[in-house]
Image (cartoon, rainbow, N blue to C red):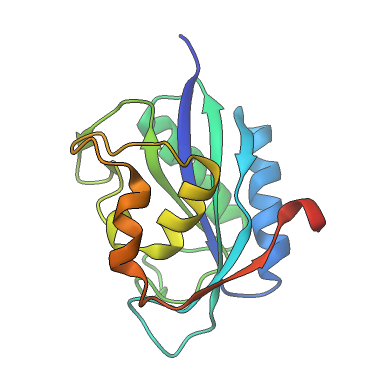
Length: 169
């Protein structure tokens, strides 16, 4: 099976956020999800559940032979290893050590109870689109054909600032 290009969103707002993101990338590489490129880090105001620490977010471009549900299982395993416990006491979209989401997976378009690709809220989230456009400025939405960067102006009101470049850490 040939490798496919996938884009993943990474976020953390508990503990050493930068180290949490770095460890997640290391684990991805160990799980045959090779990180090809990663955006800068962005500090982002929480979107859905306010009153929690700001997030550090990034987007990674990866290559993998995994099917989407296999990739989801790997991401959830990395989250569990980092101490994330979905469902048991965790506030949905609340504070978390690590959050890993599949944004795009090759040309796959799918909608299952446990996974939707492209990610259903990515066009509403500046913390996803800005780092995605940073590393893949010519990438187009699979359904509309529009460049992802064309969706950014509508999200300008979401508070976010560049935190650092991974190359300088």
